Image (cartoon, helix red, strand yellow):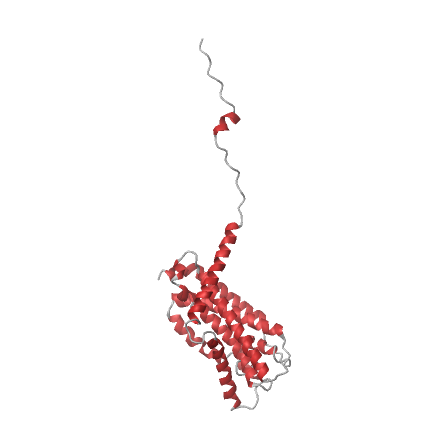
Length: 288
């Protein structure tokens, strides 16, 4: 009689020869951390590259970063001292025009640098490790630190030269500097997209913003303007920044018109639009 075939092995015995599937591992944060660290290294490398390009190849290097705003302040002080006897605040032309010009110059340096970030770093953006955000961040950080250093150096020197007993109120000064940086970042990021997509916008923007030097409170106080001028220039965020800056150096000046919320909202909206458009069109810009 033929023997019956052996019984089929049980499920556990049948699967004994099959390699076990390891349990799913929870996702780790190592990838995110390594990406952030790589992005930080890229930003630092871009900063060092721009430092060597902008200041390393010029005789005097960083000295020119100090001499340019110093020359502008001296020129304004000397010119207006021949026309009027005293500035609108205090007795020092140097301090009055420095507190108006330096935050304006901080905004201009940052907005212009961020607007040309892609054009400056375009050859490096072909590498996967370098992103458009790295290029903008590098120029933002470098120009912010440089302008803040120049501001501290010049204001300290002016206070020592004029032998002023000014009691500084630092919170308004810090707020004005932060607002100038945020506004410059917002305008610069948005212009970085528009200038690359529409080359004519660079010329148009230059024409539209040329009066800013005269309409940002560098030479005058908002309170001295006629009502119509106040109604128009109130919408200029730089007018609020220069007014807030001066309240930190002149305790008797209140600048009640300053609205920090307005400047912050304008800056954040411009920055948001710039980042959204950059994320959408940066490939088209780099492929041109």
